[in-house]
Length: 329
Image 1 (cartoon, helix red, strand yellow):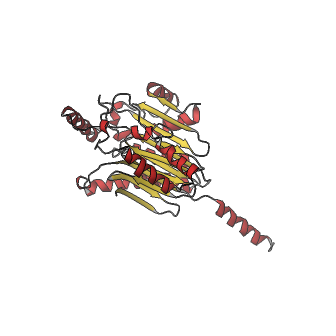
Image 2 (cartoon, one colour):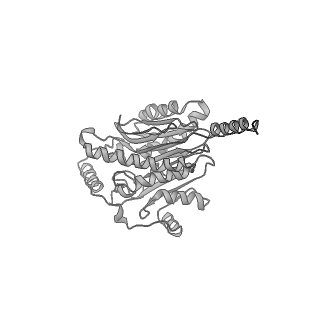
Image 3 (tube, one colour):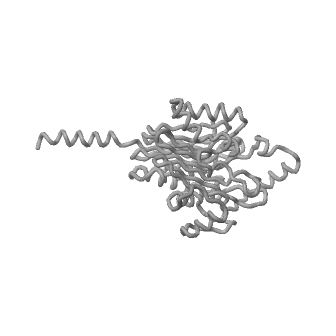
C-alpha cells in the first residue's frame, strides 16, 4: 500500500506534465485608426468586448473543451458586437449591402470549412464550422451557403440586421472620396479601419484551431471575396507549426498566402513563430505595400500579435492565465 503511493503520485505528476498548456489569442482588425479620434469611452468598449471574447473562449479551454469550440465561442462574441467588421457591425459594399465571409480550421486534421458572400447568416463562423463538419467541401458561397445553413437550422436574419449607422456613414464617405478622385483601397492606401475578427486557440490536448470572420472592405465590389474565408491566406492551423488568423487588405494576404506562409516559414526554415510572423508581416507584406496584421499561437502556447499598421484590436490569455488587451502600438 505504501509502495503504491509514490507511484500514484508519479503518475499524477506525469499526467499533469503531459497536458498541453491552454492559450487563446484574438484580433478585432488592424488598420489606421487615429488614437485622438477614439474617445476613452469608445476605447473602453473595445477593451471590454475583447475581454468578453477571450473569456468566452478560455472558459471552454479551462474545462478541457476543444480549441475549435473555443475559437467559435470567441468569434461569436465579436460577430454579435457592432464594434467590429464582422456579423452585426459589417461594412457595406459599394451597392449598400453587407456580404460576410468566415472560415475555421482544425490544426489536428487540417480539415477546414468556410463561407463567403453570405447576407442572412447571423453568425457566419457557425456556418463555416458546419461546412467543415457536415460536408466534404471547404468553401461554400452566396445562395448555396445560405441554403446549406438553412438546412442545418442555423439562425438566419433579415439583411437589415447587419445595418449600423457608423458603417453606413463610412460608405457615404467612401463614395465621396471616390467621386473626388481620392485614394481608395484599390491603390493599397485605403485608410479605413479594418475590423475583421479572428481567434486562435490551443487546447489541453495540444490541438490548435484558427478562425476568421469579416464583412470585408468598405465599398468593395458586389461579389468580392477577401482572404478571410480562404484557407492558407486569411486562416491556417497545423499542430506541427502554428495557427494563424489575419486581418487587413485581403488581396495582399491572398497573393502572398500569408497564413500558410508563416507556417511554412516555421516548418522549412525552422523559424520560431515570432521570427516567421515578423518576417512576413514587417518585411514581405510591407515591401508589397500590404497593410494589416496577424495573430498566432504555436504548440507550446507562444503567442504573437504582429501588425504593420498604427492599430490592431487584439488580446490574449496566455498559458499562465494572464489576460491582456490592446488597440494601439
